[in-house]
Amino acid sequence: MRTLHFDCFAGISGDMTLGALVDLGIDPEALRQELGKLGLAGWQLHFHRDQRGGISGTHGVVEIGPQEQHERHHEEHRSWKDIRQLIACSRIPEGARKRALAIFTRIAEAEARVHGCTVDEVSFHEVGALDSIIDIVGAAIGLDMLKPDWITCGEIELGGGRVTCAHGTLPVPAPATLILVQGLPVKTGGFKVEMTTPTGAAILAASVNEAVQERRFTEIRTGYGIGTRKLDKPNVLRLSLREEAPPQAAGRPPWKSEDLVLIEANIDDMSGEALGFLMERLFEAGALDVSYSPCVMKKSRPGTLVSVLSSPAKLDALRRTLFHGSATIGFRETLVRRLSLEREEALVEGAFGQARRKTVFFEGKPLRSKIEYEDRARIAREQGISLEAAEGLIREGSE
View 1 (cartoon, rainbow, N blue to C red):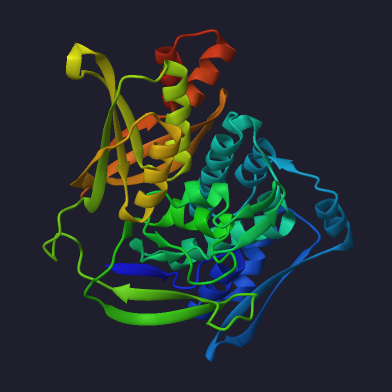
View 2 (view 1 turned 90 degrees about the vertical axis):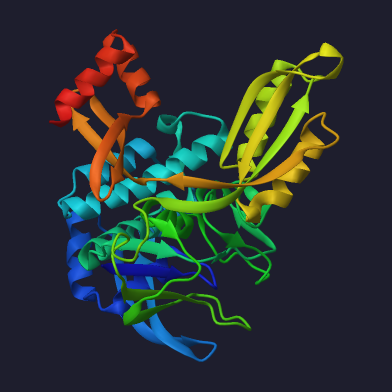
């Protein structure tokens, strides 16, 4: 089994990913030719050898023309609908098209949560600019060319300090980045600047099958993508192409196993509105899941059991959110193990428009799929039909 491993010890960005893929062996000219099928003008993609901290690798640089620079300077944004149509109507390979749409879908969902709007209302700022589109679609094309059987990552360095973006000056990680890396192992503070960008985080979120720490493998090739910043530590992304035994042959089950923490608090003095707001804040702080259950507390008072599932890296942020954002004065923490199946996201197109479908796999074979509720609800409203009829319409259109 060929595994591609993202070693993000100095973070990840779109241009670092492109550089690492070319350093790993992807033909840069073939990459440019496929990107040309997007039908966009005003860009050039260059690759050159460079070094950071004594480590040699490939630096990918997207240059945009004067008109595109003017549009970016004046913050002319592309909507999620514009990006979706651009990629869906392009002539890039189907596998790359699906991956690019999956990456942008993750970004759209994160931005929707940050701004409290629907996915279709999202307008992209930095990631909607031409150079970011080239970065993301280029990464999708490169991964499709490489065709690994499995993609893994280790601990991801997010950086530190503050970052200036379309929303103003914010602490690192940026809000969208924090949402995108949920469920992945991360750390902060290794650098005093932003090291993982929203683009880089989205590439990982849409591509990584499993987060790993230790593994037995045979190294095939290694590629280094050079970052733009010159720091006191190497600003590089390492991609490792490995040969591993398939999960079953290696004695591993066909599901991902994670050691997580379950936080539980009993609360009897918060309104429904306050609890709803608390749930939003917990997800923003990095919770993997939040659920509320009715319970009976001491003195026979009705209350709410707040359950929060967290990775160890997000514990402190969630603890602070619970103490500052809820009425609790204490909670319980329990180590738990979560088992999950491989998941794949794809866009379904038909006369109804587009809808997102998630499919889960068991031992490499599709087990079941589900159309996203938001898309079923939108199509049901547009067509004046029930949710069940909307799902049937979508599934018929995808066959």
